[in-house]
Length: 490
Image (cartoon, rainbow, N blue to C red; front, top):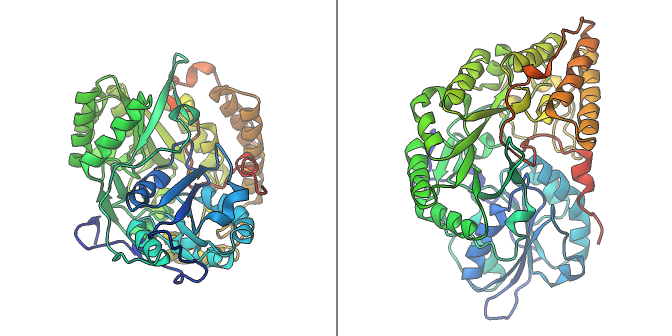
């Protein structure tokens, strides 16, 4: 059944998937434990995935250390002191980074109980267990985590769905060290990160949330969201990024939160992720979002090709993307579409059409360049595997990639993707503008297709949109730079 999660109803991701305690040990310190929570990567945001369980654990008297590997390193010399080490796997990149770290973590913390939790835990449970992880939990992990900790500490706590509390962010790097908002005039704002809901009502086949939430979402109580926002305002936040998979899954809930925030802090701005179909269905609400401070909306457009959109079960068409752009522009909100341009079904003509429609819609300056080179990720459990004949197009599951590799029927498409990705990484290193990065792709695509390249002028790029300094692409393969940024050794 689609819809919100109420009462005792829980998603499949809330069930323990791997083992009971095997290595964990009891500590005779009045039921208290020393716990390490680790975030490998959360797209430049101060991790809610650490702060929320930290609040619950500290309220029960446990000593919690938090390590955000994007801004620091693991306390390698002290790992043996922790009775439990929890690693947040909210996205594919985080999971790849964690997979590189787990062998040494296991070797240096032989007695610790290792727990991985989050959206990418369940699909990778087998690989994580083979790497030494004791327990794997899904995104609704808090209740089982608390029960597990109680068991290891020699006390008891029933497994139940935990009500959300105010996250405890003490011990995390300051907000100013995370991704910031870049304004069109070059100004910048300090960004806070909040969540108003979990899960999603929709079943887009390539989305990693779908296999664990199965069409459900859970609203986070307004009081907890506002209290979290309040503490981040006190820490310097002047803009908020909502981490909901889709901010309008529960529009009444979302608008109540925005109204309260705007009343208390009228100068605060925000951004959110909203489906193309939701923008169309709730177009009357878009001006209200602007009134409450919305600067831009991220939307998983994925493709302009209707065949691909149908296979992904996105619920919108290529023309709908342009309609959504018109709706948001009328309200002076920038639409920042994200794409998965390279799939097993992509042709050179498809890719040229994507670039052409981005140009014609004046979206060049609204699209993060990396969004134009991403390959489709197929993790274990993906609803894509339910498509008739799709599994036959895939190679065997790769434990290194944590997904099913695939090749396009046209080798020229895969060759183009490799060249395009190298170019975007080079453009990023050299500080190229979005237009310059796009122009390089424009040239590569026309060369690959053997087509005459139409002229491309800077005035076709559209307005420069507000954007976060860390690119938004949670479901893509990690870049070489991202993997290299996290030290594997201590």
